[in-house]
Length: 353
Image (cartoon, rainbow, N blue to C red):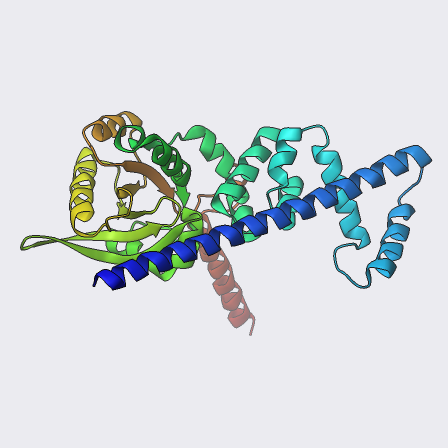
């Protein structure tokens, strides 16, 4: 058994080195390509200003570049215009440029086209880097006004007091103040078990919403304490934090006893499930609503690292559309009127015949 354990540790360390090297190489390649795009955009702008050239110069440049690079993609007229815009957007904001150079090209273009305010851009650039958001996830976050919710809702946890400093900072980065579960399409009250089952059915979307590093282990995960059994709604392992993450799902407003139960489960889990080289397990309580003061006091009594966050289901009708789209009752009333008018017309036809 000791040889098997030693081999497993060796295997895990080798995989970690491979993963780190791959990620580092990918980031380096991305930064190199983005720097190249920025430099090309700069050359185009400066040449147009110096020579008084118009739009046609970009088309000519694209044709001539493609003759030389022998079919390598990425230098169409449209993409050269995008490089020009990329330079203009970030030439006077070195802090944002530093972030933008770490974000894939397609995500950069999406942020440039959808987000105009600098602080908001900074948020989406940083989030894309930290959470490894794909273009689809980033678009969904922008549409869901993630930045506005980020400003309104501060993260609530006790990581500072329950974890070492370096782990506390990483855990804080991994936790969101609010999770967007709009992808479930839920529009009516549901039970905790149905919410759990829906998340399992859409586990890929949920993992993307949780962010980079979360690996799904299972739902209704059993932990034992002597002859008694307890069940965790959802259990994950976080590759960056190197720890188990238990998620407790609630469909009612946060109550202080939720923190007490989670603290107990983390104690048992650390003693019976956690591997010797894992970091302390973390708990996340997800609920539709919470009172910040109540959460603050509840977490003070917990010695295990716990975060409390809200989640959003399908959004309500935007304010600007309220009053412009008929309600359910109005639609039913209109259908009754149409049906009544149709019956009257049929009666008139029968009388004439």
